[in-house]
Length: 454
Image 1 (cartoon, rainbow, N blue to C red):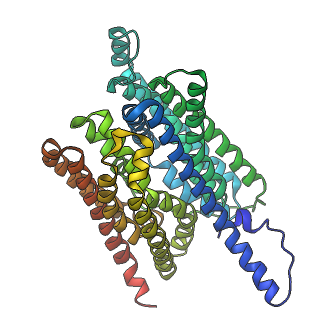
Image 2: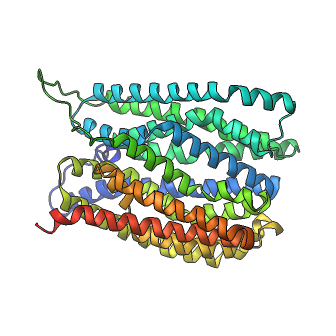
């Protein structure tokens, strides 16, 4: 499935059992390397959080989490659904040997993202100028400054997503996952090490700058890797009047993809939009550690999406519903098998982990237990939402997100003032379970008519 490594293994053809072992190695090695890359990213992200929490405290970690969350949300808004559509289109065009069509897809998507950002920048220019005049020295613990900075770097995140999804669709999932996962924590660790060696405090502006720099480096590196993949692709000449590889999209498809992308990232980052209304940055920092640790399933689903997303798209283009159902079942088995032991280990080690961060992180085990319940459902339902998006049923996925997001917002307004951070964690966990159950029900219903006829 991961042709980037499997086709370059260079193993000679050997008869008999040795040949079967060589074939098995070519299949297992790419997946193993991809999993190892993702595991390294998890360790790097945890190390970065530990370093930031140790040097800047729970408050500094809360500032970093808010800035990254708001940047991701703004970047998805600017992305207009184009990164998700690009994965679907590029995977089909790449399989058909049409690099020119891929370049055109990327060029048009990039122009639209930057054009929308420039228009929005003009709209907020006056309020930003007023903010600059009111406070000469920026205070990066002030939410207004964090919002302004997030808006400025948001298009970089949009381009990162565009090139990451396209690179995955070209079969270079290992490179895409590694770059988008490791660049940010590595730069944060370098910033922490520099401050520690210099004996200087780790200021919020340092954290903001390090993350912003990662959004410059990562898209450039992804674009370079994608160009290498396209250069290696033998181009298939289309006959006069022949259609491109990609079939026509359903009417309103891009709008649904956009809504789904924005609500997906908004749903994932919702705690860091709602929590500032009810709790301080220190409590947000403790919750952020639990959120990052328990998100091993989200990390896993990102890994699986890099592999199964293009496969969903190709099977959907061939209208092969039994194959889609089989792929969905595989994602359920893999994600559940990985999540359950990982969650149990995290709960068992919650005490020692909290001690590593300091006295401010005493509620870590409570947050981990609450979030684990919702993410268990997330793992058990597999990549239902990705299947719907890749199969041209993004409107159904959008409906699940709208319902779950509305439930989470209503629950937060009810629980937040009375129960604080633990109550909000329970609301977020319940909404995760609700959303994924709804996606799974719609995905199986979408596939049922064809699969039952086979």
